[in-house]
Length: 471
Image (cartoon, rainbow, N blue to C red):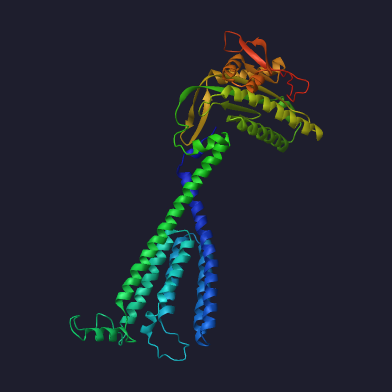
């Protein structure tokens, strides 16, 4: 059973980076739509509030912003260095926004309103729209870059205004001290002067905007990390769900070393195999062979998982499953016996479906043994396999092969029956054991003593698929 998903190597990290790059691209596409909607809202509001031709200047700027947004999106998609282009377009947007908010409207009927007044009507609030759009990009870097470039452009424009001949600031006015009776009048007079530019207000704008930038960037960064962790967790769960029963997936996904410990424990090992598959597949097309195997594997895996089993490996037309891994349970032998009967019933029902459509029935053999085995992860660190090895595995495999010689669809070792009898506590479990009967002891390769074996009882109304001998 592969647990490669547990090893987060450079290839995995690169896949995550590529996925995040895709999310950033998708975020920018979404941001373009949000930007367009925001521009339409602002344009509609200005068209209602401002007369012509004054509003024409602002509508032209809105159209220019739309063109820049579309050009940014198209350039990023086609460029080998999208981050550099994004940074350039953000800087252009920031500079153009500062110019639009501070410089006078050339289409206005009168220029009696001084340019310094544009810094006193809270135009800086529009800058936060740019920050919100950057957050949609899902990139902390773009959020920080947007905050820095936007505030740099705003600060440069403010500085330019302060250099104009008529501009008044706190620095170029010599006010009386607060103790002087004229101090209040001079201060209010300066504040209400139409050419006054408050450097204190500019400092507040810079500090608050950069704080907002840091908070938004932190939120985006945290969201990215949460997404990566969630992707890793879901990938781990998805891979584990292919091999373990659902009630075990959560436990394994939340543990970093659940599969790393090598240990010896008692497990039930079940082998199921398609009998005569090689000969049967010779009459099928390659795609039909694969489809048959997929159907067999899917049906078998569903039953195994329903009974708390683990798929150790797929072996062509066979499956090795274990009960009691990765952690042993109180009724592993009983669960394995339930599973063996349910597998035969499920596959027999599948045979009826196949015969109804004119397909030939399939035959299966199931071998089951309970005993001590070594459990752990083996293989290269980049591609580990969690598996069960030992004599218990060999015995179960040979019992599955024995089904062909004895013409029994299910053969279970006496050790399994003995453990199951000890685990049985209810009448229902005892009824399960009544469905098995002891048959002639088996002589298995590698064992000096004959092994007591049991078989599922044949019943007239049973769904169990019979097995025929195969050379």
